[in-house]
Amino acid sequence: MDSWEKLEAACKSCVKCELHTTRTNVVFGVGSRDAEVLFIGEGPGEKEDLKGEPFVGRAGELLNDMLKIIGLSRETNIYIANIVKCRPPNNRDPHNTEREACFDWLREQIKLINPKIIVCLGRIAACEIIDSNFKITADHGKWFEIDGIKYTALFHPAALLRDPTKRPDTFIDLKELERTIKEVCERTL
Image (cartoon, rainbow, N blue to C red):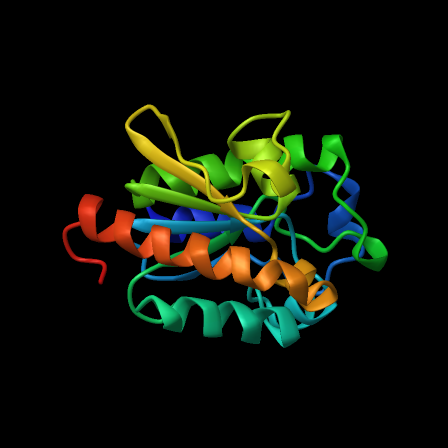
């Protein structure tokens, strides 16, 4: 697609998988469309489906706090999207067929944004984007370079709410992300 408007309109009318039958809203993405840093989660939950925006509710509030620590904001200098754009029932993990059906939307978002850094939020996003064998407990905070883009993964904010013992590691990962952004990006911070 050659424009955000066309891509978003096509995505919002998508019926490629069964998730469209239960959605309230397509959760396309939010943020600066010329961001140098792209955050990718796995898929919308109930609150995201109702609002049509990724990472709202408690996990979204925590993500906003995490971003603020390193000078980032969904309103000004990053973009946030998900692997799947419609909520899986009962917030289950998206099935492979659903991820495959939706991945073209994300691929087009990545092309339009042309980020320098992609941050995967959680295991599912990291397995889909970085490496299918990605182990979030072992590999979080590690950097990978693919086709000139730097990739890393952080624990998903919902996982940090469930297990606060992961927060110190996440703080270290965030500070490394901040350092890398300053090194790689021209205008983000």
